[in-house]
Image 1 (tube, protein in one colour):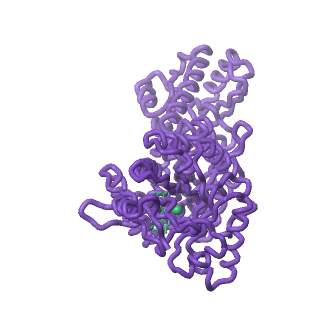
Image 2: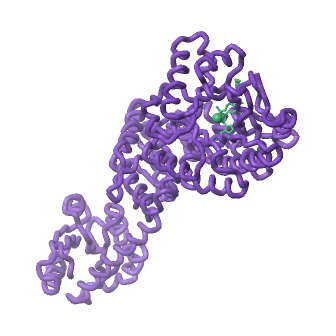
Image 3: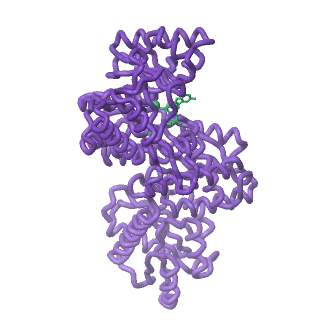
Length: 573
Ligand code: C2E
Ligand code: MG
């Protein structure tokens, strides 16, 4: 035998003479490369099996406390993973063959054994067992992370739920999903994505006890259960620990990658007894955690209300997917006015959904579903192209160079193909890049400043303008913004609304506009509804404005009519 670590062999044999014979044969061909243990019957073998770390068992089928095959069944049950070679009398050979069918690796007939035969039999038994284990691993584990796969997990979960029922101890089922993992794969490549998944798997495993289990369901989704829980606080503590374990960035190839995850929890027996039900509930809770987290890591327990919300969300997402295919999205245009010349200088493209035969739906009702499902990337690309074509048509038809502002959501901003999409939209429409302004959310810049700066520089290189949308002056100071190549700051509707009554908001408006001018940015007011606001903004030297005071968002036809009515530039207020 050529193993480096001495092999631990247990011989269960009541005949001392037969035991000695086996021992001599092993010494003859394996030297001292083994440690031998001896038990005369099954009952004395038990403590040895528990303490001696036995690698292989040589088992006599004719023991005083065993009954032929019954002996094998008992020993196999005690230690199902240890290979067994059975010893039989000549007249019991048929039984020995049966023993192999029942799980023994091999059989040897007493009086017909040589050292070489014994050696070969043991070696083959071990090799076969390793092969079996390997195949078992392959069939039951995820090749990437080494975690149990779906099937093995569900088998274990079924047993754990049965035990939880028996012992009346709660069990928590959790689903964990990495936020924005697709972006990691798209931006940094699959090797980095794979390594990230391996590290996540490792961190999760380390948080759990050996009686718990975690598996990868595929993609970036993990499932796990924690059994034998004291109370709900226990579960919350474990959930917090799992999330905390993702706190440190993963270092891959010397670069840090931040992981954010969403965790949904369903409890047995409170939330249900059936595994499929628990999984569905944990999924709904995970989704709710993701939706509420604003991109950060969080966990959420399942509650009944989530069922209805989850069903509604799935329905809405499906309808939106169909709407995109059926061309049910339309773009409206809200004029932007230069407060000094009082002329229309541009328009913001605002999306609407017009289901066939139904009422027009405003973005407030579907934007978050588009964003969370990722559909916004495709729908947004369509808006971008449509708006650029429209602006170019108006330039041609009315000889007016109007600026077209298009909203880019955080998800669109993180799309690695954003710059390519903008390039395409400019190319197919023929629009001058300087006429396109992309409106970005503050969170897009804040989440990953290095990435944001890189994207902004590449967009700037195309010659398009950048506006910071919905600026409230709270999350990022103007000094933080100085480092970004931005051309306009759009004051949020809430500040414009409150500036007449709230001195703090009035001060923000004034400061933002004057600081913007220092940095050569334009100050643009949104949601301007009254003449009083128009006058106040003018007195603060605000550059441009949009809002119901001038015009509501208009259909392309209505906007066209507006331009026809006022050749050379519509004049308002
Ligand atoms: P936003 O970019 O802040 O757009 C301005 C919103 O204010 C629009 O809402 C507009 O109709 C509304 N508005 C304009 N003037 C006034 C006013 O005087 N008073 C009031 N109360 N509201 C005014 P809308 O069209 O419902 O759009 C909501 C949000 O949906 C937009 O906010 C934008 O973030 C998002 N959105 C709309 N279209 C698109 C799109 O094509 N792509 C992306 N990514 N987001 C879009
Ligand atoms: Mg906007």
